[in-house]
Structure formats: structure tokens, C-alpha cells
Length: 178
Image 1 (cartoon, helix red, strand yellow):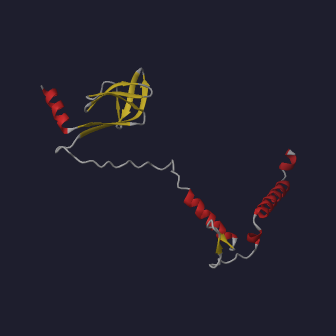
Image 2 (cartoon, rainbow, N blue to C red; image 1 turned 135 degrees about the vertical axis):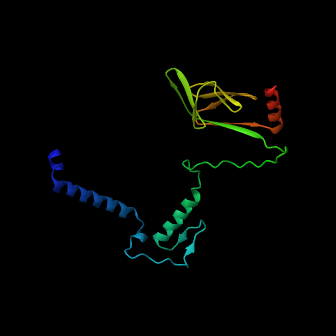
Image 3 (tube, helix red, strand yellow; image 1 turned 30 degrees about the horizontal axis):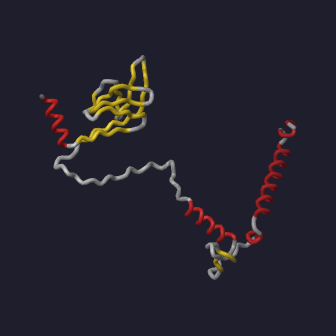
């Protein structure tokens, strides 16, 4: 068999035979109305059945109806599109705006026995202070953060936002100065 596959005339004969079988298979699966050589024109006076498909027209128009049904039914969420963040609508009660500090953890690694974290696009180590947020410890799964509200764990790829009301921020600033 290996000797036959090395001969070009045999390979061409196999390819032509395979193409013929595929064409025969496709033609045999087509409905008889769509096997005609000349395409039929769309008849606007064609009857419509109760389920919305067009009866009495060419196979092309029925294919269009099927494609429209498929496109209408495929409104599932695309997992590859970026998710849009919901817009929060809040009424400001305080005259001064709230202070927010964010920390997004991009990566965590250990090099020469020292743990590092890529947070907000910069490399930090445990004990570093980022505004009011302190990186307490770094694990393989994420980072433990300490702040005035307590402790939080932020996993790799996630973000943390600390929101401090204006009144609370003034109280914290007054207590840290004295």
C-alpha cells in the first residue's frame, strides 16, 4: 500500500473518487425541490404555514428563514466578549466625596524565598503600604490586605476597593496626626 501512495496517479485517483463520493452524499441529502439547476425566484404570494416558515418557495428562501430563526435564537452570552461593568447610580449625601483606594492583584510569585505581588502594575512585597491599604501577607492564591475596616483576601486576578466616607476619612486623618 505504501508503494501505491507514493505514485501520483494513484493519489489523484483517490482524491477524485473521494470528491465524487462527497458530492454524491451532499446531493442525495438535498430535498428534491432544491436540486434544480436554475434557482427559482422568490414568490411574494407564497403561503406561510402556522409556524412562520415559508411554503411553496425555493430552498434558498427556506434556508434564509431557517438562518433567521437561528440568529434570533442564538442570543446567548459570548464568553469571549469583555464584560461591561454595571454603572452604579448613587445619590451623594455628603458634601465631600468619598475616598476610594483600589488594589488589583495581577500576579504572585516567590523568588529567592521572598514573596512578591504585582499590584496596580507595580511590584510590592509584604509589609508595603499602598495608601490606607497594607499588604499583610502573600500566598500562592492571593494577598491578605489590612485596612481600617479589617482584613480582606484578594485572589490573583481580582481587585479590591476600599471606600472611606468623607467623615470617616477626616476622623482617621485626625487620629493619625496626634
